[in-house]
Image (cartoon, rainbow, N blue to C red; front, side, top):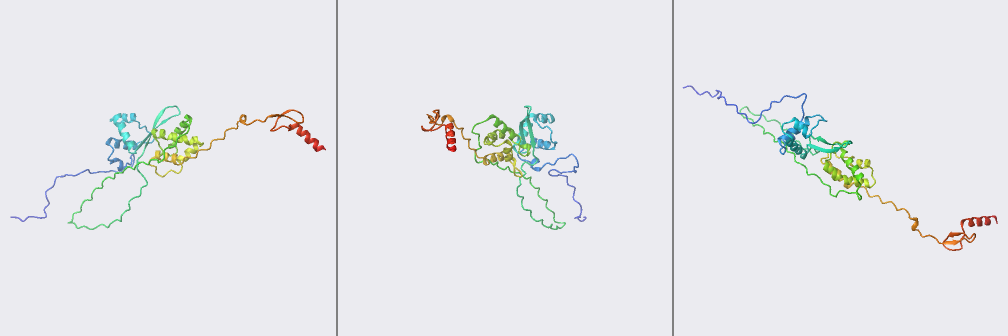
Length: 299
C-alpha cells in the first residue's frame, strides 16, 4: 500500500461568503459625501434615509416640496411627507413658512448634512502599537468590524424665566416682531426658526420694541456674538430675549394743567385803580411800577 502524502492539497471547498463584499471605484465627478451617521441611522426609516441622501445631492435652489418629490419618486405624497417629518425631527431638515411681499406664503427648506456636529471633545488617541510578527503556521484572527456610531440626541435647553410680554399689545409692533424673527436666517443661515417658534417669540420681541428699542437694535442683540455651532436656535433666541431684556423707561411727566393752579384774587392798583391779580391789596400794576421807578431815578 502507498504511503499517505501529507502535502497533497485538500478538496476544494464551496464558496460560502458571509456578509457583503464591496467593490469600490473612485469617483471623480458627480458624487456626494454622506456620513454614516445618516446612512446607518437606527431611528430613521429607509425611505427617510434615501430621501435625505437625495436632498443632499441636489444643488441649492432646487425645489424639494412634497408634490415635486412625489412626482420624482413612486412612494407617493403620504410616505414622502412622513419621511420629511422624520428628517425634521432628527435635525437633518428645517422648514419655515414665509410670506412674500406679494402676500404668497412659501416654505423655505434648509438641509443639514451634519445636524449634531457639536464641538465635543475628541477621545484621546492611543499610541500605535508595533505590529507583532506572526509565524506562517499561526493564523491571524480577523479584526472585528467596528459597530456604527450612534449619535445621541442632546436634550434641548429651555429658558428658566418666562418670556417677556408687552404691557399694551400693538398689532404693528407684533407684525414688525414677526418679520424680524422670520428673517434672522438672512443674517445667519443657522438661525432658521419654525412658524411655531416665531409665534411663540414674537410677543417677547414686541416687548423689546415697546421699551423704546429700534428693530435694528433688537436684531443686533439677537444675532451678535453667536456660539460656533448653535444646536437649538429657537431656545438661544428665547434665552437672549429673556435674559437681555432692557429696563423699562420711566413714563414721561404729565403736562401741567394750568386750570388746576390756584388763581389770585382781583385788587385795585394803588396808582391807577386798574384791576390786577395780587396776593394782597395795596400793590401797583406793571405800568405804575415803571413810572414810579422812573420818577425815583430822575429824583
